[in-house]
Length: 359
Image (cartoon, rainbow, N blue to C red; front, side, top):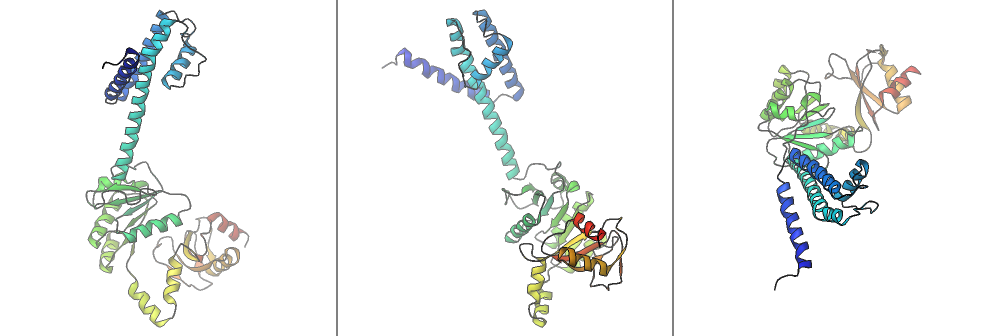
């Protein structure tokens, strides 16, 4: 049984809208902008042709077209002639709705593509700065590293995970991801923003991969503090020969076991000093170059009195990785040196400067 005309017309209109939206979704942004401009201009010309004098005033027409396109229709302006109403019903409204739906669809597609590219490590973060890069992913251990970094970060710095084996971002809620072809891939590291990073942590699956990653990262330059973790001390020594500025770490389980066997509770003290989750933790503070030279005992007293912190030692500016612990009180600590201390929270450099000035 054929449908009556009053039912058939809306059905045909909806079908036409679907077809138009399907084809509009495939056009470029430039073509879509041209279509909107043409629809806007032709609608204005048609309204002029049918005698809509009030509606075709420039400001009124822009306002009317926008309300029609957004399907708001406040009702304060509307066609006054039958011909104008037909133009609005069969040209303006269907075309505007189709164009708006196409814009929404294309915008959604772009956002979805950006999210998918980020999830699969295909985006670039060259413009990011002062962020942390974690090279290598080792499951639970790497999750713990990210958790500790998040707890430690006070400025909300970004974290970028870099790996060759992962297919998707393991921490999509709080970290970015860059997938590499190899851990020696300079292009991939450039996408991760190595040159502008604040710190780079390399913890690959093998010492060979860690060494290759460290060499590639340093070859790109930048001022980031690079920390590389090795299973064997020999691998760390090899890297230090080429890049002495890289801080290398190795497992200390054997040392902890022996120390705990001789000194009850030694292992818990060592773990407490490294933990950033709660309790006192080991921090560092670089003295400004205009601080002058002071006695080690002076810093010991100021830290304890003003900040309830315990000074552990210091490192000279030209040898930042060689800590001098438990020095004599009369030893001079020059400007630019790094102080290592134990405290419940990190001391602000400005607060430290004020404490020294009033000492």
